[in-house]
Length: 300
Image (tube, rainbow, N blue to C red):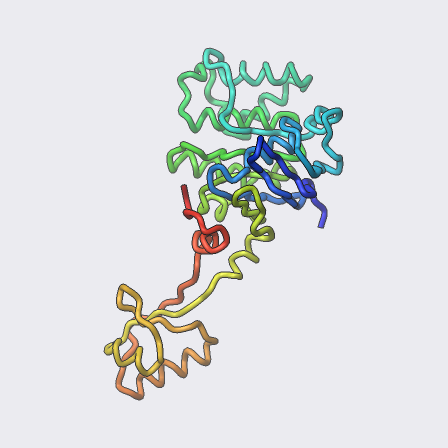
């Protein structure tokens, strides 16, 4: 697997507190990698170490094939866009004027401003100062700044934090489109499980600074338990015949079987004079799996 980010035993300690513990992160090139964990799990510290903004206590980080060191971090970051914590901007300036500051500092062509504004759909804001922007618009402006120069890698720290549902949907769709439209790899952190589930194809789950699960999102979902729940004309007797449990809502719960087994079950109930009124398949969602892996609140 070709990885744009690879860490080996990455560790950061502040005093007696180990914030990130021997982290082995592997972000495949061309993916949207969801970096998932509760607040305080070590996500932001990890991303700062990848950018060379924080020096690791131990371990290494390789970004875009280069081992990150204090001496070369600026050269590495020339190919990396980032939005860490809240976006910084000059509120009295327009979106275009803010991006002009970024463009001049990075020595980019003027065309990069129009391209970035169009990508995040802020090209219509004209002379409107940023102080009049909504929080979602400010987040998109921060993304525009991160996208300038067509980075090969994009690091986004909680990009949907504090947004309303419409703003979350906008940012989610934009992030999902970036690998195909921009050819970049995206590492996006979040404590919102539904967001990672809807925008990522790979995921790493971190808890108390330690990686507790990493791999394709499909593989994580494949670990979920599946079962059937049914209502019948006589649920008590059906549960007894099937040696099944009952849920708090009164459903009869049985383990998932293949289609042939399910057909035999329903025919068997019918022979006993019990009609199946409703039959539904259930499975654990990402929040259930997250709880099992970390033992923490599913969304903080």
